[in-house]
Amino acid sequence: MAKIRDDGQCAVCGISGKVTLEHVPPRSCFPKPRPKPLPIYTCQTCNGDSSTEDEHLKTFLGATATNYSPKGKALKEGFIKTIIHNKKLLRKILSGKLTDQVYDEHGRLKPDVVNLTWDMRSMIPLWNKMARCLYFHVYQEVLPQDVVMDPPILQKVATLDQRMVHLMQKDSVGNDSEFTFGLMRAVEGQRIRFHCQMLFWDRIRVDASGETKTGEQAAPEQPLPAAQFR
Ligand SMILES: [Zn+2]
Image 1 (cartoon, rainbow, N blue to C red):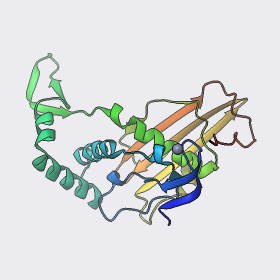
Image 2: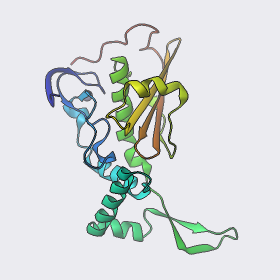
Image 3: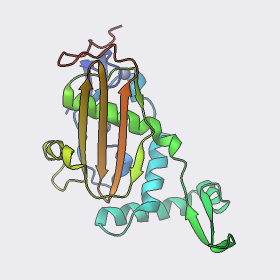
């Protein structure tokens, strides 16, 4: 698969021209060997540098991974190695910046229990980009720019919504279904509502959804307006 194409279309903003292979699914979700990325391309602006978001995601997945699967185990071991070497991150965790305090039923602090929490807001741009990329991959249309995305929901569940199964089968990456996704699109009048679910290896599912604000760009059963050619 070519890494760069000179005559492509960006899956996120729709601009045509030079595009680069996007990492869908995100690299950080998988220990090596990683599944091959889907053939989805984005422009230089949209491809951007998401290494911080990626690192954040990797840490989160490593901390919450279980030994349930060899991949989960590998991510967890990677996380432990990271916090041993990354003193800044370790200090952050120990200082409570990433933690919640746990109280008992009488409101007393339980000093021996630490509940790790992550600031998910920093990962929202990454999930939203993934959802847009998958939308383009399935419908060969750019999701209108005025689609307002709901904050992605991260859940520990092992399945996709039943209504999405057909896409899961069609678009599984790799043989062992480490990454599967489903998409639903409803066109009501001039509004588009869509729902994207991404399921990662070890019982983590991210739901991203959104809808057009005005619906003016969307006409049912018609190709969406050509992307913004500049
Ligand atoms: Zn773009």
